[in-house]
Length: 582
Image (cartoon, rainbow, N blue to C red; front, side):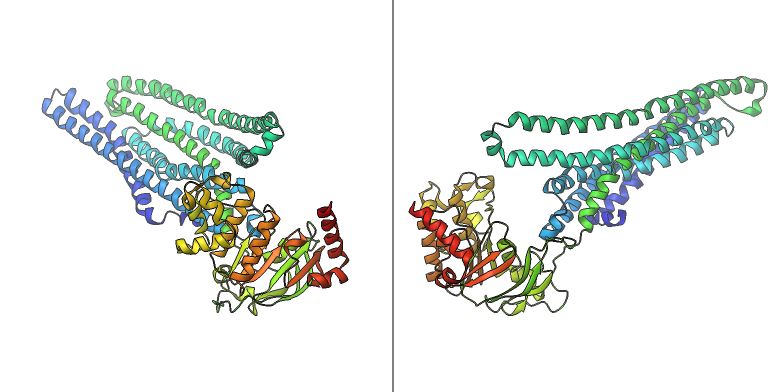
């Protein structure tokens, strides 16, 4: 897992490697300064040698400046490496999500993916920066300061050994408790983002049903849960501070007692050799050693906190797309728009008992107009989603242009299949920018022709800015019917061999629906057109009508023949005809 994420450092690896080296230089200078201070007092001040005072003072200033330079460089390089790591990690995760099939995406909620790309990556960025700085500084400071303290007096430095087990025990006991809490917190963040996303997306429904207070209560409950968990975690982390203070003051008290005794005894026995300056240096090293241990405990807690985000980001990066192009000899050209379903069965999950499609056999010639009719949940949308290989069949095979769709390069196949889904999506930007999703190189003339075919040109030109009219997020400033026609025009710009309209004229009036179908017959006769509809009027003039019920094809034929042979089709037709007459 760590190795996988380490790949995200990439072009910032030199900054990530140089930052710890600079940190080592900074720590070395900080440890050296108390020793220089000792020399300054012993050989300069106490001896009354002004020349030596000047010499050691200059050395002291130079060491301080070097320490400052190393520290600033380490901070800059760590910041550069951390932000670069986060940038690459987000890029890799988003790129992986773009390759996911619908089956992969179904494993993660959209709110969870957003949280992983934002909060989780931000936490990993902080941990990474701390890892290449503080995780190096802490052990280096501990080793160098302990070595310097032992060089002054080995017996007196044993005082630190009494504090080490206490701090290590505190780290070992507290860290697992903090991890459990933060693991729960990040899962709660997913629920919080889900609530916010649903509320904003469905704000019109919330307001129309006057459910604002209920939504606020739901949000407050989840937010309060995060608050309680964070407070509990912070209380545990806060125990580090009093433990640290206890060890620091305990060591200082012990150093003061034994150090003062040794200084007094050195008057009677100079062999003991401890001076006031050396004791002062020992106090400095006490602070450095114990603060390095506190720093190490904070690093340990931070890394423990990042364990959950690390696992969650790794889940995205390690998720293998269900649908990929063939590794070798992928077909790179779709001959025509002929479609064949050969004994096709499909289920949305490998372990699902219910099959959404059962033993479907169907041949659609290239250039045909096919209507697909059936009740809600009968499997109409599932059937057409197998054509551009948005899902793979469980049994049988789907062929386009006489070739199994699993043999095609995915991009080639999907470039030749244009879908207008039930849920029409427009993106923030101008109408022209939205339409060019279908063909980035489309000319203004091609855009206008596609809009005329979709009966969208008249209302677009009625806007003050025409094709440069800005579409708000989600297309909220256009009506449902206008949104559907713009999506149809966008699909037509692909100039596909197969065009699938999945109930995509449901918000369009009957007259406009008829005009769109008439334009299709006249202007794109060689394109295979599949029209899923609830209205018989939308499909009755199709070359072929397919009736689906409970995942199975019940009848295939034209309008007249189905009225005679299909009870389901006749029942739907008569109910709609009667409703129209009434």
